[in-house]
Image (tube, rainbow, N blue to C red; front, side, top):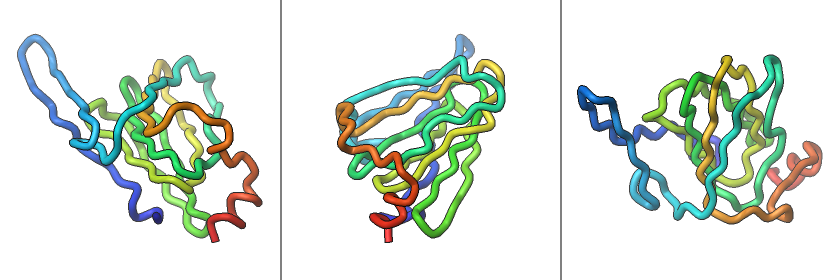
Length: 134
């Protein structure tokens, strides 16, 4: 997989005078089964999250509130994605180094993951990642 496989995906938005509703279904809006959901919040100003890659994990990242950037790197090329809509998310394929930064005050980042947590899937060393990616 390559950086070009990582992309924004619009989710259905059902508008109503009482408020909007958006839903996400495994293998429908996103290209994998959802096995884990986690969220990141109360990130102090100027902080970064992530700074690692996954060997086989697929993820879908959504700014549930506020905004932040996801910076992806495939070992050769880097691309920055700005997330700020709760009905649009970023699909991140395996073997992408990811860093989340530029968090607005009160932002909430929700991540849907294709697998349960497994430390063995993480690559936390940049040089090792570049060796494996190339």
